[in-house]
Length: 115
Image (cartoon, rainbow, N blue to C red):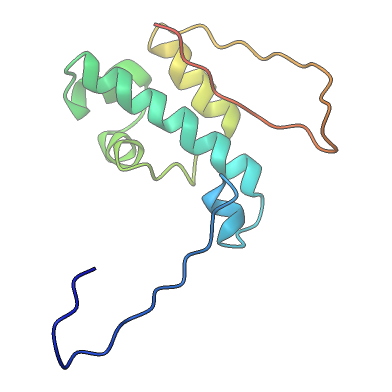
């Protein structure tokens, strides 16, 4: 950072995140919220890749256009993880849930997209 004469140096405190912004913010159910955000991102990516309008996506998904708008803005709060998975299947995606042992104290949830 280039300092100008007469200006005091500003110190910035940086804290490394945990990888889950919802946990870092102290929100309830952070793992579930992160999973919902990842599923929502996949829905958004598919809608964008197909160049669907919000009205077209709404018709395909069986939801109202304002709900598509919320999804596109990553506002999945009113949707459950199960409902988001149903929306992905409506978009012609297979959704696979794999359960396996972990070497960590608590397991993690992932969304892995393959195209």
